Amino acid sequence: MKLMKTIGLAMLASAAMVMATVSTQAAERVLRSSDTHPDGYPTVEAVKQMGKLLEEKTNGRLGVEVFHSAQLGQEKDTIEQTQFGVIDLNRVSLGPFNNIIEETQVPSLPYIFRSVDHMHKVMDGPIGEEILKAFEAHDLVGLAFYDGGSRSFYNSQKPITSVDDLKGMKFRVMQSDMFVDMVGALGANATPMPYGEVYSSIQTGVIDGAENNWPSYDSSGHFEVAKYYTLDQHLIVPEVLVMSKKTWDSLSAEDQAAVKEAAKESVPYMRDLWQAQEKKSEEKIRAAGAEIVTDIDKTPFIEAMKPVYDKYVTSDKLKDLVQRIQETQ
Ligand code: GTR
Image (cartoon, rainbow, N blue to C red):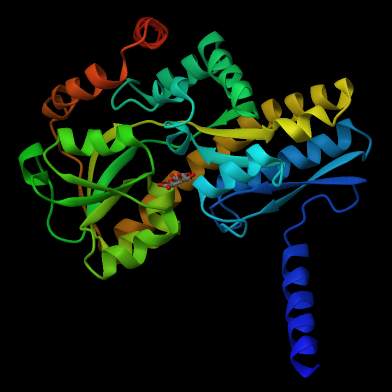
């Protein structure tokens, strides 16, 4: 009895904590949204903003509650839960979709985008729409793309100044076969694992490092255990906001349109937050004494990626997408 009471109290306490993350409490129906990042991170704030817009557009019929900090689980698991309809909305990197939805491999290819501007042009246009559409065959509805900056390698061992320096080192990658091959093509070893396990894996020496953008390198605390960061910028992977197809099908056409609009309208808001956060995180990490290698010749990195393109860009559909992306000015 006493135990039950304690459990009951603990549940109440955690319910109260969860309540604190509700962004739109007044709505008649509150959609649950997952994010691996902590409160205040640009993706979390963008989905809260999306929820506010949605509540306005639907006169309070729909709102959003963001469960940040991986409260609902690590990305790969939350994707499955979203497909099952247990989670309504999910903000994830495209990486963990690579093994499920082949179209998502294309914007996840190393060095496919020449710059963040190039990525925006592509993902804001018809190619982006085509990739969003591809989610539907997998019980998901693609709503909008968010920024994820560019990802680079960091490690606990030594400054990396060339492809040769990576030889034999162990890096964590997102759970995507393509990223395993990407690291392999550079002569290093990849260990796919959930984001939440990376800090302790670096600390205990299970891996030498990982790869990510400035804000994640900062908010995850990885810079504390892996202070060598080399800006080789091998990936500019967009992030995506998806809805469970089950949830989508339960909405009226009017509310579906409001969801799409609210998601799209949260994109410029997210991009502003992102730019500011990249600068803040870079300053913080530099001040903390991390060693940043900026002067790096990317050409050998780009050349080393040819086998990855050869292995993954095989169907006519993907070849055409790659060509159109490369031709986008
Ligand atoms: C972050 C991204 C997350 C997650 C993470 C990772 O940059 O925003 O969604 O994918 O990287 O490396 O797992």
